[in-house]
Image 1 (cartoon, rainbow, N blue to C red):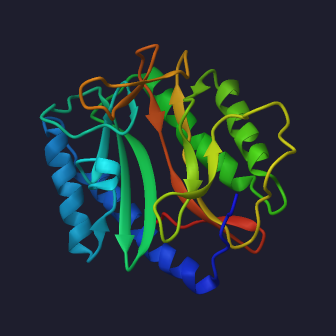
Image 2 (cartoon, one colour):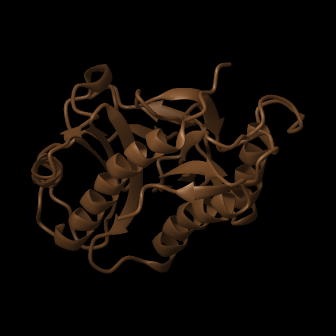
Length: 253
């Protein structure tokens, strides 16, 4: 596994791309309203990214048809924008990639549409809180498996389960680099595998399911991922850089 170490100037370039991600997510969170279609939400996101002289990195990536993953209710990741209208009580995942001057940014939120129920508030809080908790506890020298184990324990302690088969990842001159960072421990020993070092840049993205972490991919669009339990899900993501032995969030405005 070759995990690249970025130089300070390279991290600053990644900071720019990720700031655009954060600005776009903030823009969408402000202006998405009940009655908008997922296609309209995607168009709003793409146009905002282009207005900042950057490119929506997901559009065309591996054949994905849009710049914004719009994951509604039961869809946890990779939701394809269509003519579905969001309505009061929905929860909407927005996952955005940006490329600026050859460097990539990535981030995601799950947002409420209007008033949502307490159960959905707790579901969204789990993904956000797991993300922040993991970032606050990263230190150089810990292993990526330890980070995955930490995420899994936080999620299950809240009464939820992590989506399996999908993961966080490194990022830089490519949208997806080594390492892969599952939200659960693979194997039995967290004290194995590569260690976190200064200069590493990677994405952490808790994907939260309610009863089952077994993923299903939609037969029609071939992209949208749900849990086999058919229940609502949530997803948050930040890009972080390891600087001075701690994780610093890059995907903030």
